[in-house]
Image (cartoon, rainbow, N blue to C red):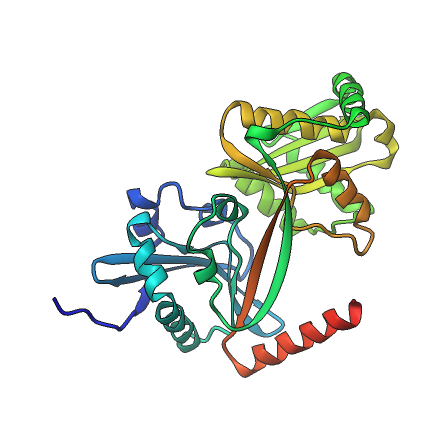
Length: 328
């Protein structure tokens, strides 16, 4: 049998990946997202060699003049039948992906495996990160469905009070006719996590398709709490959270988190719940980190690579690295 060493990537379709039964449980919620924003485009790629298929999915967009292919939480999609082939040939396969993207005018490739892959000890992760570039280390605070218990007496007490207080609030979800109206009220708030109208509309449209759940608590016509959760096979993640200081003593934010996480595990839709992308103690976010840690101290360490494909993207990475050093 003749075995070639071309490792040629080419474009494929969303349907070709989505309809592949081997990939059913490997696709992240980002793969299915629609209404992803102006100038954001889904890119679907396939490599077929020696009767083995490897796929890649990312979202392309421009940032500071650079055309980026962002594979965060998606990236390489490798069927179990192709894993050993990929591990053995990952260096060549990755290099050919770089060449393909460079020839298609991309400036940067971002690889960031999902927390679920890390949690499941996916054997291909180290090979997926075999790219030269700027490396970032991330910490994910997670809750395991098999180990969801609140050890802190104070937190248990506050959740109990919060659960009792929830009945005093109007609860709105993504199917409520005024959901978008109340989401837009976030724009009038002093937010730690800044968002804009495009972000709100993007979340709302994709929530209607089942990729996010939105829970809003209203009291006295005021926005008290917003919790947005992303949903995909095996994993749910906190995407956005707002809690008004005005109602802080009602402990509704903690109660709402507990209630929703409990529901997620009860219906067995997820193996893990992820509290956002990272632990951030900078720029006023320390209180957010403390809130997450009150629920869990179980963390996963992950890496992401910003792989430059052009001279300008190499310069961008160098500047970003120097700024990080100065900040530290």
